[in-house]
Length: 167
Image (cartoon, rainbow, N blue to C red):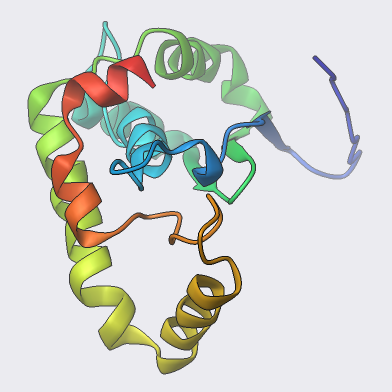
C-alpha cells in the first residue's frame, strides 16, 4: 500500500483515489468486461446499509460524488467531497468499497447499460473512438489487451452476478 497526499491549501475539496492493479487484462476469457461491470456495480449500487438512491439523496446536498475508471491494467475509484462533509462521507466510501450490496436490481441496471454501450453507443457516438477501439483490437490481437475494457457483446451477456461477487 502506498499513500500519496497532495495538499492544495486553497481548496476546500477532498479528493480520494483508490487504485487497484486490476484492469481489463484480468478479465477471464469469455467474461470480457467483468472488471468494468464490477467497478460499475460498486459505484452504481448500494451498500449493506444504504441503497444507491439513498446514497445519492444523502450526498447531493454536499456536492459530493464518486466514480470508477477501468483501464487495461488498473482500476481507480475517485471520491470527491467538500471538506466539511468528509466525516459523513467516509462511511459511505467505506461501505461501497468493503460491503457493497450487489443487489440484483442494481446488477440488471448496470449490465443493461454496459450491454447498450458495447452494442450501440461506441458505434454510434464517435467515429474516432470506434476507430481507436478497432485499432486496439488489431494491435493487441491474441492477448488479454485485445478487447475493449467494457467487453464484447457476447461476453457481457455471459456475466452473472456471481461472477462479479467473485471477481
